[in-house]
Image 1 (cartoon, rainbow, N blue to C red):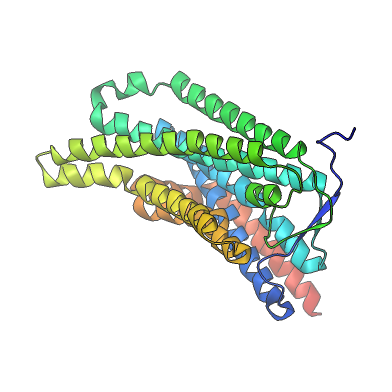
Image 2 (cartoon, rainbow, N blue to C red):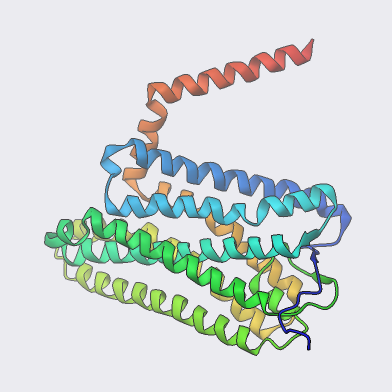
Length: 330
């Protein structure tokens, strides 16, 4: 008697965003540029927060973790896509597909958890300012960080184990640029009812509850801000959480848009193009949103680039590049 959990297919074919060979070089340059901007922008935020003692606060602790997560988030999908475009080889093994899917879900859930923790931090800071240092003490921040990682690891592991029970009978072509859970489950040739049940239950539990918590936090925050008598006080309170609210809107808006559109239409290629918004564009925009709307981050960037060690490092690298350029011109 055959077991249900046999995996007959050993590889998938990722068709990418387009099969038109004429625009492959354009896609490569565009996604490479976005990846570099995402990587450098989020890395600068992490370094600025670490080096500036004024930013050693719970809000920036979670922001640095969010930036690290965004770097890892894009690194799970974009480098493989760039490699596929460059080599023309669109094959990904079943094991690598599971690994990519695991880390993608891990960092998506971490993004979700850190955004929720930051909303709670803003809620305490604005609604309970006198008790802020007591409530948001370092132990609570570390506990929230560990809980976020534990929950994300278990959720991703659960989905990967559920995929392992499925059977894949033939070579699979996926009109996507990475292994997304929905796409992998949809291509199984065995019964996927239990997978769908777990996927929607976990998605609802780990998606709706944090989002409800964020909405509740902002409801209380806005109610508290409206009770502030001075216009300056209202502006200061709004500016404190404005960046975070913009990022929350962008992350959940694009993510929900993709999954609602995928439920309404079977056009997988259109869904793949739409998913670029929350997998690539949102992590790229986060550093700009926080640096443009946050005075503390702006000042930290100025201090970072004024740092003597940083100046020396940049100068040394520029001299090396200039030397290589002169050498190559002979």
